[in-house]
Image (tube, rainbow, N blue to C red; front, side, top):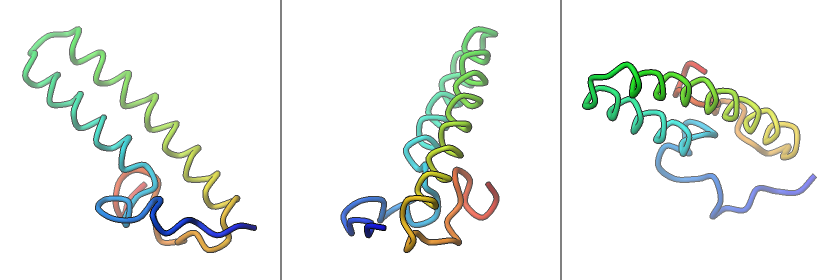
Length: 82
């Protein structure tokens, strides 16, 4: 197995979750839904959350399988929970 490049997947929220980019986008669309006050914006935020959560979990499982030195304490999407 190869080692994780030091410049990749470290720093900021990546120290706590594998999918920090997904978490950021979910937060962004949740804010849009709050600002939009419409069924359409809320539906889009929910859809985005479902899709990106599944992608974050899949990426996390791949990292764990591919890299033996990948931090086992790191979560997929939500720090300390998921």
